[in-house]
Amino acid sequence: MTARQCAFSLLLKLKKSGAYSNILLDSQLKQSALSEQDKAFATALFYGVLEKQIFLDYQLCLVLKQPIKKLRDEVLIALRLGVYQLLLMDKVPQSAAINESVKLVKKNRCAYAAGFVNACLRSVQRNGVMLPEKTAENYESVKYAMPQHLIDLWRADYGRETCSALLESLSQKPKTVIRVNTLLTDIDALATELIQAGICVEKDSRCEQALVLEKTGAIASLPAFKEGKFHVEDTAAQMAALLLEAQAGERVLDVCAAPGGKAFTIAEQMGSGKLLACDIYESRVSLIQKGAERLQIPFIQTLVQDACCFNSALGVFDRVFCDVPCSGLGIMRRKPEIRYKSIEEIEASSALQLKILTTAFGYLKQGGRLVYSTCTLHKAENEAVIEAYLKEHPAELLFQKTYFPHIEHTDGFFAAVLKKNEQ
Image (cartoon, rainbow, N blue to C red; front, side, top):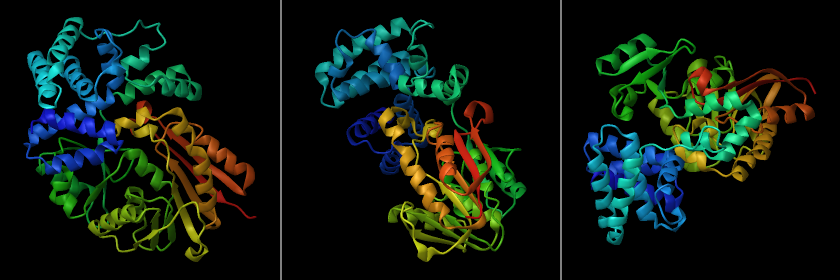
């Protein structure tokens, strides 16, 4: 299997199954015999076409004589791969971009479309990058390959200027950030070890124990990772977890903990005590357990528990972390398919979030501290949930912040700190 065929197969599977892109990609690459260079190329094609789909389809619609929806999936995916290489990958020869796309339809039971694909891609090649007029309503949608309903949502929430800056930032490649496991090492020792392994390392001055990495290769294959000296977690997520200010010896609850990154950060901040990390699915709870074992954090306990259902047997906790399920709009650089969620899917989150927050507060002792967080940029899931909760319950808002990618240079994130007052 070639890198292009790998990307083609992944895109076809994703369209038919609706699975998570990262899970599909990891599974496919583990089974493939591709070189590391080809794996990197296949990954770039897969995520690139997935992210830029609206832009790519706009280019195709300018040269097609039929509606794009009438194309067979295999033909459309081959065309998208070709256009992506032609217009957005400078290092790929244009002849290869066209010829290899023609080969893809031939190899995937669509030989009848070979001439059609060749003609379409040559027309795109002649046109170059095409965009609507800057005054057109769909200009930013095409330029940034972002659905119009998301642009409208962000304009309503944050204004046109912030929306435009947000769109630009979300088109950039996200940084790889790790959290140093201070239970096993220190930041200087780990940085030195990673630099010796050929990785570019920079400290993040805003967040103690955070390192920004470049040229990492396969992180999970690094000796430092296998030895539990760090876990991967964006700076914004680390800062949100640290807002809990968990202390040594305390009882802490993480109600929606999988896959465990924020629980690990909280535990490392504590150093000792008891941290109960819960999630609704056993398979996801096992991820937390495996991570805690790798990081050698003995005081993390795990439990399969629905965050919406109060369990009095758990007792009372000094602090509660509540990272609720959300639309994920702040992390679409890492999971491009998130941008294709419908407005109905996005708007459906807030009722569940409020229910989880209400249940989570029931575990908190009087005077205790709770952090509510999401990885989305949507006021209905963030500030509005906090406002709705405070209207009905004896709690005090100590702090809230939206982490914007174009300002903080992190994933999009939201965190609020609440204190439980006397009834």
